[in-house]
Length: 187
Image (cartoon, rainbow, N blue to C red):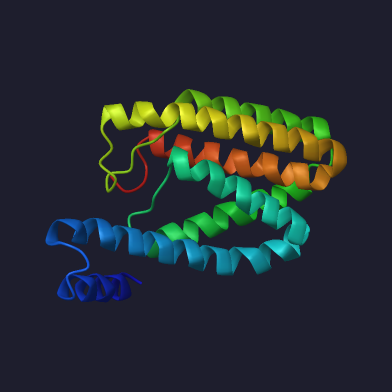
């Protein structure tokens, strides 16, 4: 994927669709989007076997919705990131199917949302976010957390199995954020 992203970036540079200053950012975004698509292609069918299509769709929505603004653990290589992300998400989906009690899922969601609110966002070295940019992300994180908390609570009343999936998606994001803040991952 790195090679494909490099080739695409070079092509865009040659045709002057991007400038030399934009090349590094373009390459990063291409790799990020390719990894995102690859993780979806791997996770959705596998996750459907674990939690059903509804569960994996709610899980994936919440995970990506929160992770987009919070950051978290990034492996040193794109393939390592893909592998660790799919493994972590698969484990969390599996755990969500083993938590039939909505009270436990509500506790997991509450703990996760509180952790994300207190410790997010994490800065990834390739993003180079300034303190001002990190501060600007915090209100967006709070809004997303409120949406996830409301969705999870509603689902816990209507479809506890799907509510557990959303609770454990938030837990996965909190876990990856915590790992990153402990200094692990690409630095």
